[in-house]
Length: 239
Image (cartoon, rainbow, N blue to C red):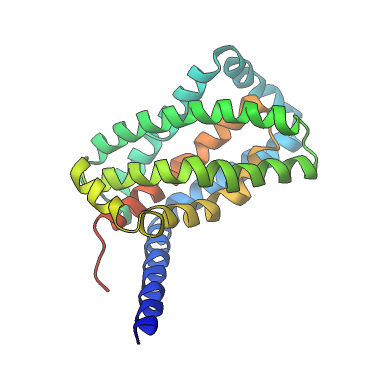
């Protein structure tokens, strides 16, 4: 009987993870469509259009000159201003204090942008700068199943739960104490894989100096999903 209860409890827990992830992604259908379309279009046009490559050379040179600072500013802009527009206008993703939370997440995402800039440099040293299928697969796998699992998902999960608790450290600690991996990290990680595995392949088709900006564009979608997951994890709705 006890074993049956444990199995049922585990099953209900994983259903909760799936519900939080699904509800958060469904709530962001509009921004998801807009930003995915933009990201795919940019990658395809860059590959096919010499004019676009020439135009983006200016951005590439600016990134090369400024390194981590440019990465910070790119993430700060796309993960603050763009999501704030959606948070203020799309009814399905309305949250409390959207402007304050957008500013805080801008700073957070700017810091993560710096970390990703250095991570992309590490990827180039480990796997080279080629754009062949083998290199793209190696970079995508290392990105999603090492970097994301060990660093990005745990840190981002705690951050968005903290936002969901309106910056309460005590409430965040209380939430994270109970089933940290299952309740806090897994909804973020599953949604992360759903969004980023296909996108990361596109990111790595670009030169390193443009990868961070493609990351920033899609991150403006991802932070909306992250906010929704954090809010639902911090304040679960009884089913």
